[in-house]
Amino acid sequence: MFTNNPFAEISASIPSSVMQTYVVVMIFLVVAGTLFEVAHKKSATYFFDNWRKSQSKGSKQVGGGEMAAVAIKTVCLDVLTSAEFCSARRRIAHLLTMYGFVIYAITTAIMVFSPLGSAMTALLWHLGALMICGGGYWFWFFIRADVAAEGNSPFRVMRADLFILSLLASATLALIWSFVQSWGVSTWSNVFFWLYILATTVLFGSVPWSKFAHMFFKPAAAFQKRVAEADGSRDNLPAPADKREVFGSARRLPENY
Image (cartoon, rainbow, N blue to C red; front, side, top):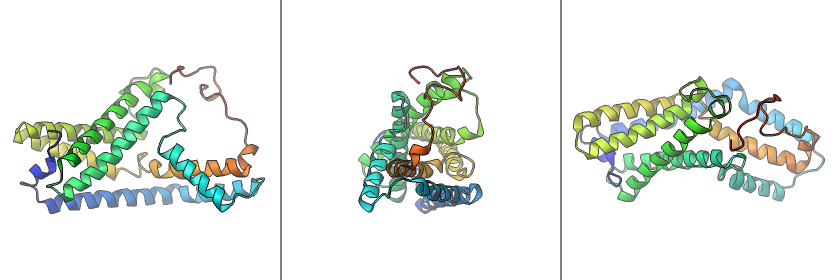
């Protein structure tokens, strides 16, 4: 199962060109959805306006070399290792999901455009899906603030949960589809394949309404924050409250949150 390319098997009934077109359409939906969110919510306008305001309050000028060092630090700490998370288990869950998604997305494109790809690519595809499930379900059932701190049901769903739920559905159904296909049960294999396609379409087609686009905004926000720290403009802001306090109330999150 783990070294078989499920897309090669399905190509017997669905032409590879159709699947390739589908991948291109999903990429287009991500780009279009992100641009729509930027235009609709004016994220870029807010970002650059805030950048200009913070620069005017800075006590020193940040040179090109220091700016490059800040950019590298942002990539290494905020992007690649998610250093903004204070909780170790939240950070691990996030990294599992993030790197799992990157591996899962890239290997999906490789296997669709090269149906006879290597067994290593198929293995990485399954590994990426498993990483998404491990990090995603751990976060959903045990780490979410409204579950860990407020005691709400893990099955309580809001619109903001659309991204993580559709991502989990896509990865989970991908694994089930591959497993059923490896057992040669064609009827159930087709059922889970189309469910997988549905979940994946929701994942990439719901960008304007989910938190998908946040993965592009967060690095920019982290970079701006570090530049503000470097030029001194952040020194004018009040010190952050205790990370365990919830909006100034007496209620606190669990120590291991």
